[in-house]
Image (cartoon, rainbow, N blue to C red):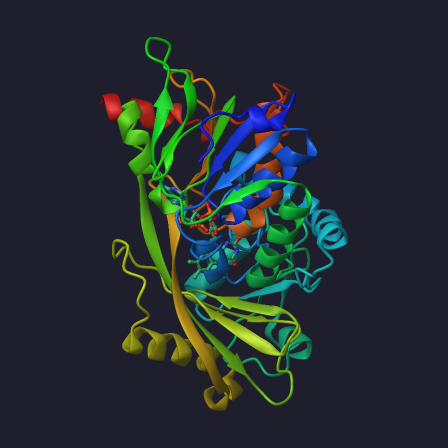
Length: 380
Ligand code: FAD
């Protein structure tokens, strides 16, 4: 392995650690901004959380209060269509963007009260009465109490988004090193400045390093004395098919959603458990998830079973990502901890990483997402 960045000529160099959606998106944006990028992945690109996702761009359906996180989700949602159009042009592939919204259905009074409460601050949302909802989606259970219609919460197919991004970054000339675990970050003695990474094949140096290692991120920050409060949150999903389409919108209720994909399949998700790095789908859990989906859309009881899988969301204690820089480790950009919304947040994250790398003002206020909040926890 080359131990310096001289291959890049006069371009500034960046190493992106982690080849999920976040790392690939950052690599694309940084390459476009004129950086010589090397993307390093311990396995193959996009084999972890990013292809386990359902692909909902749920800025409205996934946030529970107004504030900076909601604003970040909205920003990314607004960037999405143009971003995937551009990636599709560069790659010649499709991310399977579907411009249909989400119905956030209430099945209990408690759920109804919670959803109605969101109407005071959420944009692009309307309350739909049960009869009207059944007109929108006639296959829904008649037990529905009504719900929110969120027309801006579109979706993509994560597997196809991953293929599109991978092809796009290859076309941009990004160097991709798969099957190359990063063992630790390399710091300059004294200043703490990040100079590169130690990989299984030797050291590699660059002007900047981006940390995009999802649920595995704490392993790389420990040696900096920073204990990131992150943990894997296992999510299990099923793919089903029916002979005729059942729904146009994504239908989402507490603990279960059904996302109709362009190929005629549905992604049914997702469970949520903290089980370490165990990614095995469990038959009982998958059975329960299917039962919930069939309670929401009764005709799914007899759907064709296509497949099942599980992935590890990069969870954080306060459910906010770590996005930004940290004074104690100049040269390092954090882009991790996207928990339930990393697919949605990919374009905004990539844009912000490129802005930070160029020393420009960022498109969002990063104070709530600062890695320094973990440093305060570490010190406590
Ligand atoms: P990952 O995809 O996990 O990528 C991290 C990469 O870093 C991995 O490839 C890993 O191998 C690599 N890595 C780690 N350590 C090292 C190292 N030391 N050296 C080199 N490489 C390393 N989000 C949405 O927006 N919408 C959804 O509908 C949605 N649904 C979901 C459903 C499920 C079941 C799950 C599990 C997640 C869902 N998410 C959804 C969340 C989303 O998938 C994640 O937030 C997102 O994929 C995180 O991307 P990432 O690139 O940070 O992580």
